[in-house]
Image 1: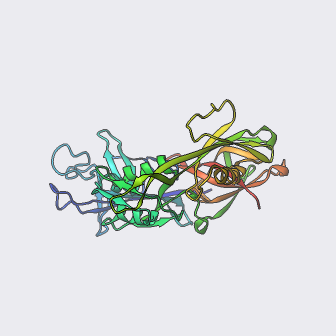
Image 2: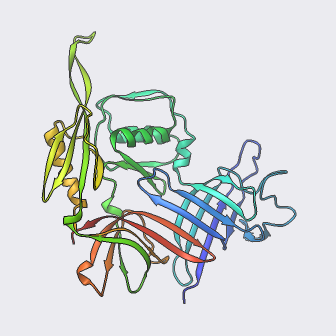
Image 3: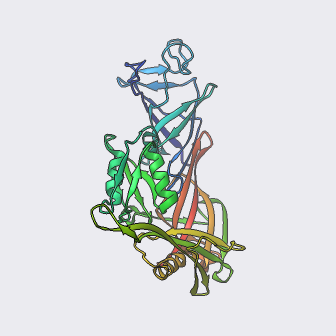
Length: 381
């Protein structure tokens, strides 16, 4: 029988009013934690709950009780033990195995009740605190240039998963995280952290980091909310768009022809193994009456015809016979979004298949360790 093991590391971060707030604490127990991890949310985060009647190890390996008279956990009188902005790392696993890092980030809120509850967020929290000076990027600047500007001075690194130029792009009177949110909503550029590296792009799955795991319905799948769908029952469509530069009227003060930005868009509907494309650049898009509709941004497309062809290739990923939904498993094997999972059904082997992981919900504590895994699309093996 597997026995669960936890390690909660909290590094105090000095504040203006508390310059000596620099202790490091390591706890080997947690009441419960719940962390959502996905490329779709911009920020990974959740909650961590610990009892006050607990000991921690300090930097000198001394054993100190959280509930002792000289420790102020809540911060209602004197210096608090835990504060917003303190770093926190949550590791979990089983005795005999290596611990896996479930979360690495910051405490963003300390609850006022017992047991002590932390709200936590990953490195995106740093960018939510970082105001940006006004700056306009030109058509020669790349996405990576923008990302480097956003993280400058934080010690974080970047990786642009899509090589593109956005044209004139203005930043000002907003935080770095707000800029990333705007890149997501206006350009379809998703952003997320892997440790201290900020990744951003249209195609968010980084093939370099994908790991394959195997899950068996008769062994290590505890529960599932999966639905097996055949291609004939799948209805898919999408809006594909891009912003292009077109000729304007007149010339600039230096005699150059004026240009302007124009958004082009196309509605693509799957029809069997082909597709139907409708130009919706004018903004009049038919309502989606059935099935699933997605939105794609293609920075390299200059015509609606190119948008249609690119969107069709992307939509085909989601047109398959196979599982959709989520399933729950134990703490091993440890899965991250972007990994590949092989599902095995020994009773109905024709349903076996390999899938890309879209998101994970990590849950742990006195009730054990669980991972709730959401599938994105099926991968051809």
